[in-house]
Image (cartoon, rainbow, N blue to C red; front, side, top):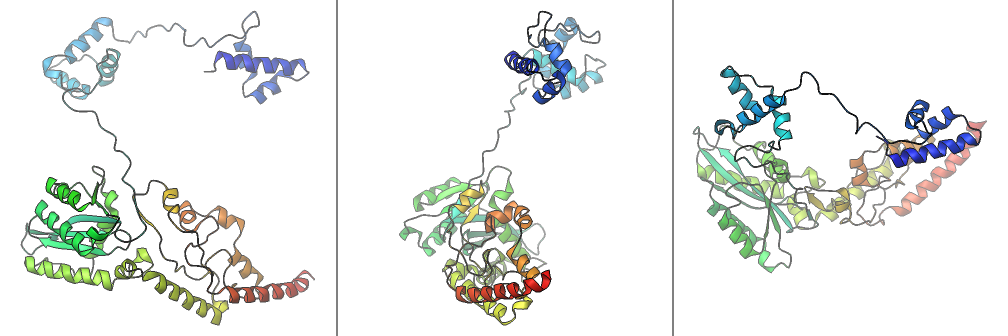
Length: 436
């Protein structure tokens, strides 16, 4: 519905335009209304009247419930046996007794009109879950994730419990334990031992420990130990398993590795031995895809920057030897910056990352592809369509222009300038012959 003030303003503007010589139909179309609508707005005296639909008298439908029937529905719904039941249960129970007062929709309408459509019985109204707890790790020892998973045994119905604590930034397993039972005391011992091994007592910034809503991870003794160690606890939202995705991904890696016994573990000692071997392999030998295929131990120690820089130089040398084999840019070997657990907005993550650039992996390539080929050079430089159709995830990771943000731009700048100059000269000499 259009307010009276808006109707009067539109009618005055249309009248002024019509008085200046414009036709009514085009003016009304420009104003966004129909000519018939303007005629309906105007009263007999020429004034603009308000919408009359709210004050219209609508006759009662002959199929509507009478006042006696509505009163009976309210009385029956308030009987002691139906006081804690919704209409979806009241109507079938009355039908079993051979009584029909109305449909479920009629019960809803009548009870709503009498203010009785609150949740019946002792059930509480559903509570909305708040936003997830967002934690950003810019270095090791800032955010930890932990969880418990089942390890099958060879005896059906018997399980062992694997406790794991993962460093969010480096993906390193900083603590683990295998027990025959799932108890809060085991979690307390693991947290205390891990904090001692990682030197939490000597660090200025204590980590945040994020876990799910398991009973053993939220016990009072666990919270007391975390408070004593200065570690801030964090928990997933109720019934939302994705809030602890990094720990779940680690369990998937553990149970799908070739050394995991398909028939189960013989005893607790075998499970503990396997967990120790797996943790050592995962930290020291496993090339993690989420951190540019370096080991978690290398990233935890800060060695990933030098390793990835060496890989970048190797790719640049390979491209220099055979530039025609590279139709695009070299592989992105820039280190992963900040890692976010349950990010709310991408701008929060981008604000923590440095803005330094990597030569050879930014908008202008270190070596233009296929010197002498105008089409390949144009493809390497990109076009407007490719930048416009880049997905939101790519823009958030690589920036608006496709740059990769980390290394200092000082490795292959000189060679890039020389090859670019040679390419420009070649294209200049080729241009007259193509136009002729």
